[in-house]
Length: 143
Image 1 (cartoon, rainbow, N blue to C red):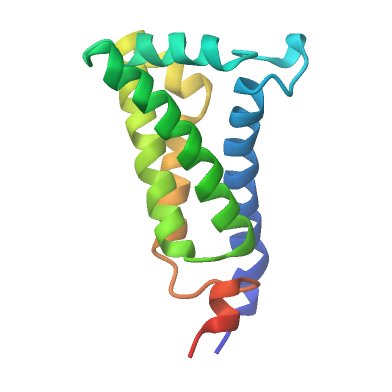
Image 2: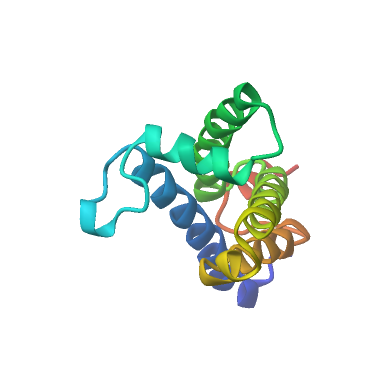
């Protein structure tokens, strides 16, 4: 039985998380104008990642920048279509939690609060514990 009162908020949450993450990826690929950009290119994003992962060797830091970018494309696409939504939501929550902790360690507690990274992580974990995912591939393929 579908919980219709939960359909819109859940879809809205999936889309909001997905668009937020895809926006960050668009930024590092230079798709936002300079005025609206945090990094503007992948090189600047790798430098920022290096600041956040100061405790890692440089090779691992660079690898983490590319891994984060890959996951910040994969998880949002999964959330948008609702495919393996629970997995994508947990992955998003963990990825954002790692980002929030790294930002806190490297820049202090205000930085992740300014960008609502803790809220995004919590929202993803809330999405992950839903019993079903309406308006999704998961719903269509449910047996």
